Length: 135
Image (tube, rainbow, N blue to C red):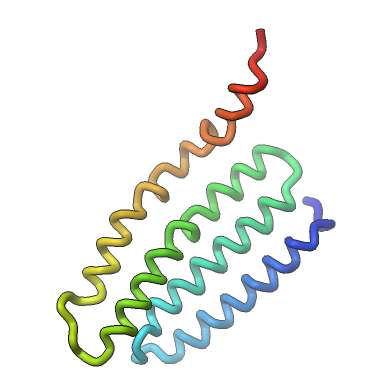
């Protein structure tokens, strides 16, 4: 693993900060938006750590492994953002639907991203195979 890329340290520092935010929000469990904020911060931390190690990886197989491991974070961030916005906006009690219904719908829309992760090998290799065909 190469650590000469300055983005790796920035991503790891951001992941530590995201974990601290998740811990702080977790202590305020009953506050409006606390649970979605915990999920958002943990998903962002997973994404940041996965991307940092993907940047630092030397071999293609290791890069693919870290890319696969970061995808739950990538898919989870928009769901958590939406759940946080809905729960915080509807904190006054003027709910039409429960925030969990909105979050469930958003998670249903983002689920294919997380389900199709095992197929990233063909995704990453497709451009290379199209450009560098062996004859």
